[in-house]
Image (tube, rainbow, N blue to C red; front, side, top):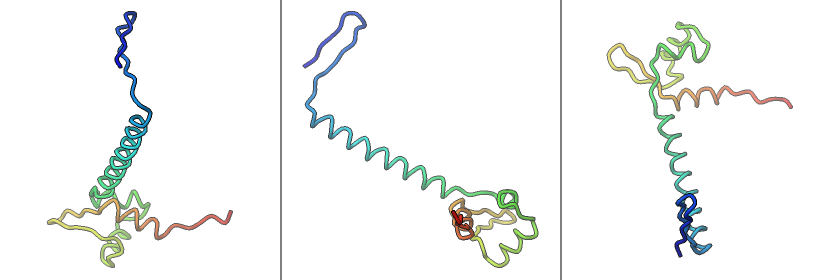
Amino acid sequence: MLMQSNEMNLQMAVVPQNFLNKMEEKLEKLESILRDKSETEINSQWIESVKIPKQLGISQKTWQTYRDKRIIPFSQIGSKIFVKRADLEKFMLSHYIESKY
């Protein structure tokens, strides 16, 4: 059923409650898919090697040692080195120290 208000030219529709419930479920699923996709895209981003020491708060020499010992995975194309954001996050989580409280 369609109703129209002359004051603001506003149209409204009356729909069954189960239709609204199904639409809400579908929207929640869609939100979840988009959230997961965004997280996946962020984690698959590549960071240039020159930015890593600053992000980790380490020296360039320490970063070189990490690469030599393969502590954090990386890709090298010519002289350019890249690290996946997800691998950096994994490294940080592996060094996470829980609170005593």
